[in-house]
Image: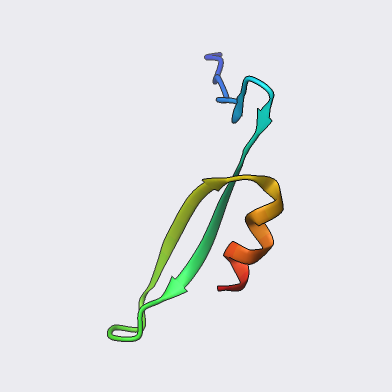
Length: 49
C-alpha cells in the first residue's frame, strides 16, 4: 500500500486553519467553494460573511 503524506498547516510557532465554504452564485444558482488559510480566531467571521 502507498503512504499518503498530509501537509501540516503549522509554520514555526503559528497555527493556521484552512476554511472552506460553499457560496451560491446569484446569476446561475450554482454553488462554488471559497477557500482561505487563516488564523483560527478569524474562521467564524469568514464563515458568517
